[in-house]
Length: 356
View 1 (spheres, one colour):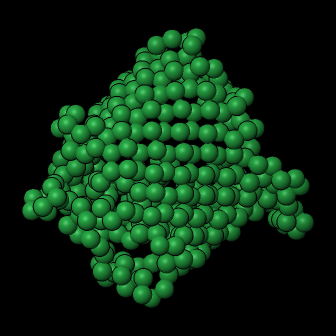
View 2 (view 1 turned 180 degrees about the vertical axis):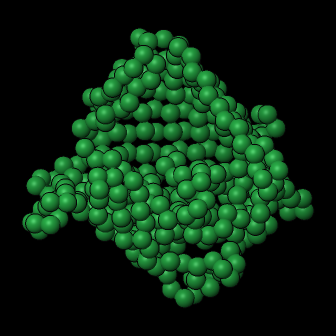
View 3 (view 1 turned 180 degrees about the horizontal axis):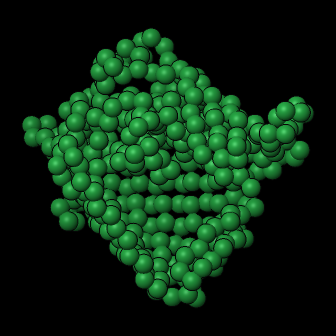
């Protein structure tokens, strides 16, 4: 019924400990109910997807495109309770307190009052989140304690509503956030299937940009299917947005017509990713640096072609960035992030994935 976990690390350059611990308790089997607690004090990369390698991963460190000089120290406390009404429908209530402190070249100093006379670079926030997840006829492989989802033939939908609780545990901000996500695997016979991820969100309130939607970039050479792989970290920020990730797996529709590729069992893959968003003026004015990031005046778009199932586990993607590549924008980007920062119009990324 009880699962405990944790880690501890030591930074050889900053000479500080980093650590984390979590507890997960199965309250009941029928109905399925969970209770959990977590605490950590660690260095994180804001604007990174949950699918990406952690910043302290040895592979992430070895295969970065840029130096890790814009990180954040995060002191985190959270607890949650989750109730499953029936397989595929669940609700979760989560309360979390986070303190963010910028490190290195990162700057998100904000004004603490309307007079813009006092400022701070430390963010403290307490959030209460209500989540609903629905996956019709979802299948699982279950053990005595944990289980693995086998997915559903139907779209999966998740809705998260978050309230920023000003004054709770020294929290400085009051805001509301609504996020809607949906993902689906759509068969398109005989040419394979398309995996689609849709996400839309809106944030009400005036807050520093780490509490807004920092669109997920990727500055490593590993492909991340939940990120924009040619977007830099902190490049774009929004308080209202909609994004679509569509990846089509051809399952050998073309390669199987070529004898060598048919023997190798390589598979073709193509994708397009796009996001459109906006930002209210108050969320710019709260910052001491008004040019800390760009806003999405037009959609950001990436497209890609790739080959998967190389030696059964390797995937290689060739990616093109289709927007925000002109010379004027590149000069603006250097002003924000330094002369060494660059916009890549094309990139090659690799990843590992077992296919059966």
